[in-house]
Each structure stands twice: as structure tokens, then as C-alpha cells.
Image 1 (spheres, one colour):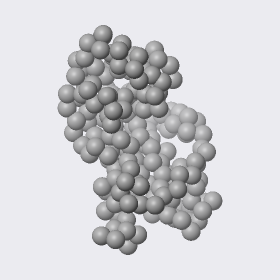
Image 2 (cartoon, one colour):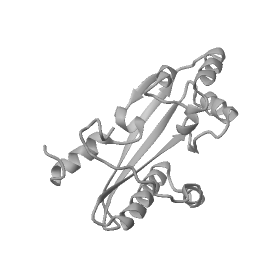
Image 3 (cartoon, rainbow, N blue to C red):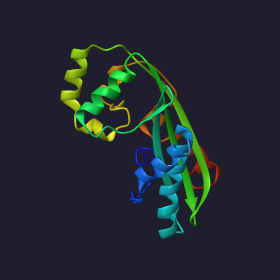
Image 4 (cartoon, rainbow, N blue to C red):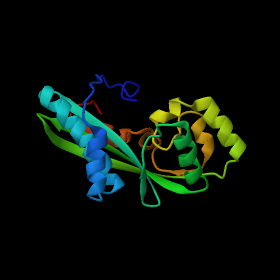
Length: 183
């Protein structure tokens, strides 16, 4: 997304214990929004400490359905179970972005999208999973909106980029405001 928007960026893995951080935040009853924000910040801080002169971007996304925070499915059965829970229902995606410089956050934003799945048939679900497993194991909710996963939905409210995991319009606006991008 960044390259397509004309931004030169280097992907640098943060190597944080996401699961432990996520579990600790959940134990503290943090909201899905706050978990996404905290994970994005942890990633950006970690890399920013190694590259203090750079403007470092950290991102994360969480999915909340009826007060429950869903994780990426590890097994095909978990993917099936998640999609059955979401079928005919509305859920929220929270996509957080945090910019760090010299190891400290300098800007953050959490985008929110509300998605309503249609009541797809069991046979369609079986075929969908057969065609897209294991690729969808990398997506919270077990779908990829940029691919066939869009067919699972009846309604989407919010930015397409937020659904994809990066509130790009807000990020670009900020980078233009601070003079990092021509605008």
C-alpha cells in the first residue's frame, strides 16, 4: 500500500512477543481498539530504538464481535468456526498505526470499520475455505477483502484501507502536514 502511494519504505520486523502482549492486555480487559494501538506502538518503538533517526511506522489490527476479540485462525476448523460466528452478523475492525521517532511515539491513529457479513450457505463456506486455506490464516476473521473474501459481505462501513490493516488516508495526511511528503 505504501509503495503504491508513492512512499519508499523498508519493512523491518519488530520481533516482539505479540501473543504475550495481547494476552496481558486482554487480561487487563483492554478494548480491541486499545489492543491494536498498543501492539502497533510496541512494534514501532522496538524498531525505532534500533533506527532512531528514521520515522518508523508500526501497525496492527484487531477484530471485535459481540465483545469478543478474534485472533487469526491457526487451523482450518478455527477459520470455519470464526466465519460461522460472523455469518449474518456485524463486527468491527480496528486498524492502528503509530509513528515513532527516536524511540517515542509522535503520532497515532486508529481507524474503525464496521462490516456486516451476508448469510452465505454452508456449501459456499466449504468451497471458500477449500480455495483459500491456508492463505486466510494470515487474516484476522479468516477473510481477505481484497480477494474473494469480499463476497462474504453485505455491507462495509469505513475506509477500504482500514479494512486492509492500514488507515492510509489519515497517515498520508499526517505525513503531508509535517512535511515528510509533498502535498
